[in-house]
Image 1 (cartoon, helix red, strand yellow):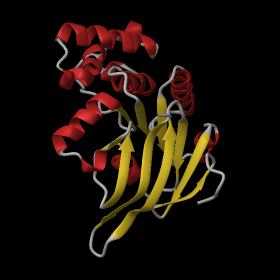
Image 2 (tube, rainbow, N blue to C red; image 1 turned 135 degrees about the horizontal axis):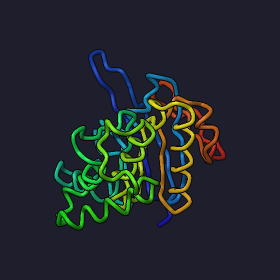
Image 3 (tube, rainbow, N blue to C red; image 1 turned 90 degrees about the vertical axis):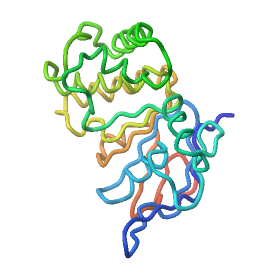
Image 4 (cartoon, one colour; image 1 turned 90 degrees about the horizontal axis):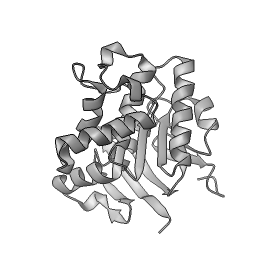
Length: 229
């Protein structure tokens, strides 16, 4: 099966009166794709990320990941899906401040039942993959923003997820560091990781192979589709 992600007619609203953050979104992402989901603030990008990443549930519609309808799973099953299939990279890094890069990354495997020594060895390999093999004992405050984002990417990758979700991964970085992070994501994609980047940066989106434009909770264009939606 070539399709890794299938989102079908997903709707999610909040508040009273309800605001339709996702208003019938449908899209498909194949294994090995590198996709930008782009749109202005308030367009529904983050809501869609949370639904794809199983951090939230749709009011209606379905989200299929690796052939599983995750919208029908219970909380424990969803935790298992996140641990085994999905890696997250956030704009704010979300690193533990007093913990070394090695242990920040190793913590990405805490819920896999892997012994500590093995977790740390896998973390070392992941840090080397993102070019931080020389910084494994450094704590976040001893690193630049770009290095901290690399640690966050290593943590997302240490479990070898099928899908990497990156929410504004360059949003807190200067342009040089941001370019380096995008280059790293390209390398990871070339090695086979399926990546979805959520961004409001049109230049970043335009540099990626596929762009899905979201506005008012709907897909308004998709460069990977022959039909403008």
